[in-house]
Length: 265
Length: 160
Image 1 (cartoon, rainbow over the protein chains, first blue to last red):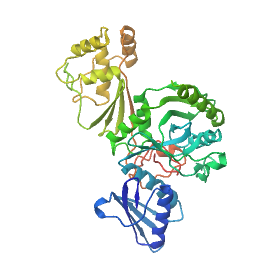
Image 2: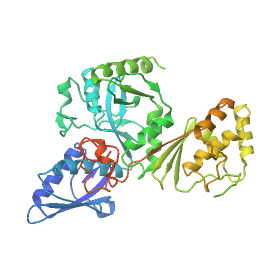
Image 3: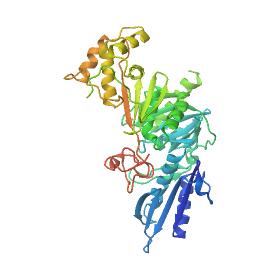
Image 4: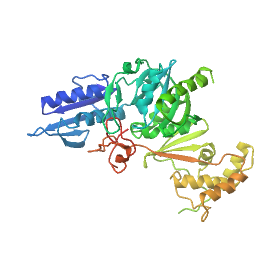
């Protein structure tokens, strides 16, 4: 398979598992993946899946063994996440940052942050306010610092302890924004009980530093990653703020964008 | 420990990215990123093993148009030491004093920004995990072999 410039050989001794892996990879990489024979000289990684008599799978991702797991017990979710993160970490011409992203007035609003800080909720409220949906999981940056969409559905959790279920952005009245665009606003924010939207400007250096834990291993391609973050964030206004309910914060973020960016500040 | 007055910046195993008024340093050995503010970055730049602490203070003062006390340079060196950004550790000048006391003393006397180095740990290899299932980020703290020890991602895995 080939995705984001990364070529991976997939081997499985069970045809059903092989098809399952292909299907998981297709979902994990939101369709930006090609399958077919690849030359060994261009291979970046190898995934091997071995199934025993009881149908239990042991797998090896680039020399790191995982499992054993049953293919019907969390295998899909785990592998989906691992493939995405692994390809992201090997993509030499791309930077994957864990972030929500929406488009507003032709520029990207990037919300870097960990899961379970209400990022998907905030993204869904932003698209309800008219912003274009780009991602609730990764901001994908190219070498020129442009922000690309990661076009999967939103991953909405029915409850705090349940895994996310895919929801089309149309259900929030939003549309998908598919073109690469420049960043306009970068917001480091997380839900705090009783929190208020009070944006404070951050320096470029501190913003890049705060992003480091959200970048899929920065240590693999460090110079490139730091350069791309510099280029991307340098074009944007960067702020940090606590926030309360996403419903209240979303319009305030868009207002802040309009005041500070559209006014040409 | 080297008690030299001629500190030398470490260069091996570091990736440096300059941004306006700051310098970012990624330490490949510790997998940590550091952001040096302008003052800390300038001190680090002049840690060439040939320039003494009083000379660095003088250069900084000329650059900023204000006299700079040696203690301010020592404060930067103290932090550079702490973050392993010097070739050899330099003995601190502030033994027996808390950082807060030192900051208060220097801050009151200084006309230029105090040196600050902020740091952040980067995630480990995405494939270092065999079982990294989680429900909350707290579940990842002890899973040191996982791609992230702070983030439980959308797929319930300790990874970015």
